[in-house]
Length: 125
Image (cartoon, rainbow, N blue to C red; front, side, top):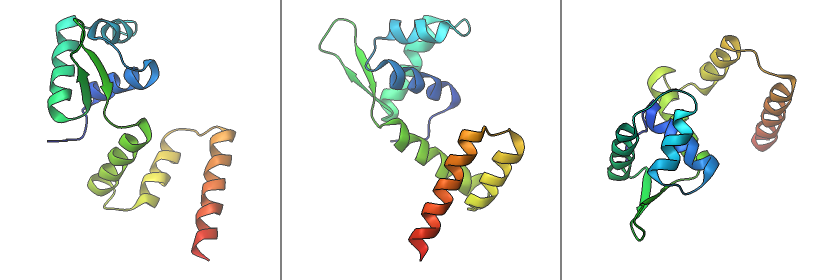
């Protein structure tokens, strides 16, 4: 029953990708540093995420340890593919053009984008 993560679930995944395997309390503390969040909300979200297959739960210790089921890059790819299909009618170009017109990219980001385009064009030859 794997589904795309909600924005709240993505916040938790970001914490887990950054911190590594963590308890509910550790995730809650990381989330609460940005804005107040109830501990029970964090717990419930992690339980739902385990049911959805977004995280795994190690129950060997008293405090359960949660970790992401998939690496950050794989989850990002799934979310972007879904976004391109649902919002941009399958056009990756529309997504990129919209993203670049919506938020200013740094010189480093633009250089990386150029490198990727050059790499993709080289594969097509």
